[in-house]
Image (cartoon, rainbow, N blue to C red; front, side, top):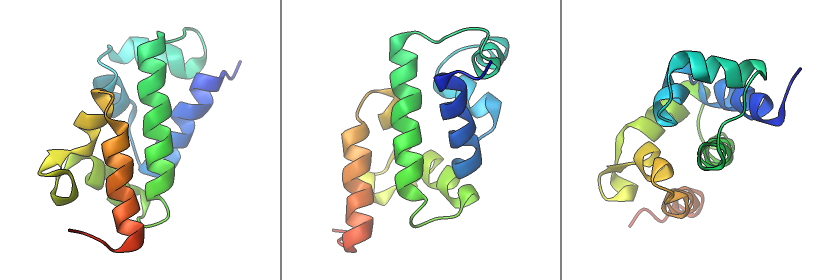
Length: 112
């Protein structure tokens, strides 16, 4: 059975070139737990669902500017648009709005 969470995970993997271990680490769960989510055999708690949902939204937004492997790199690298912080860390800490503001600056070419 394909669940909504499994669909979100597939979208993140396809659009952002993520691996299961990446998403397990981001959501701070074991690889077997993450695998159960992906198979639809378990459901993450609300906090982890929010992280996955935010990440899918960010990955989708970045797909307008970057290829999948570039999206993954953009999220895991120190980012000048985020004052040297990693976008993935901000998403984990429920500060996705800062990441989305940085992506909006990409669209307006306003890097300062």
